[in-house]
Length: 95
Image (cartoon, rainbow, N blue to C red; front, top):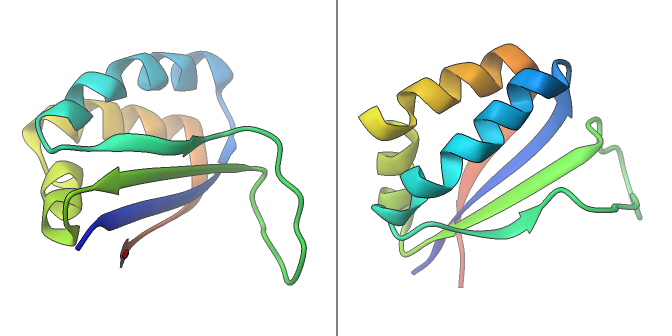
């Protein structure tokens, strides 16, 4: 079953975040990850959505998604993201 990482973020340092964005795609490949949503226009239809940017990644499984997030390959980019944005991230089983 596919695993999805869903991230809501607000970019606080655009220059550093641009560097993060450039570094992430190669880290995804080894774990079978791909972008489903990478920013773009969004409109809240119900409830609260506290951050203006949404990113959704798809992996072959939740285990692969968690392995990518904890990987040595993503360690550096993750630190960049954490210094350049604030937000929420979760992993969820898909269909």
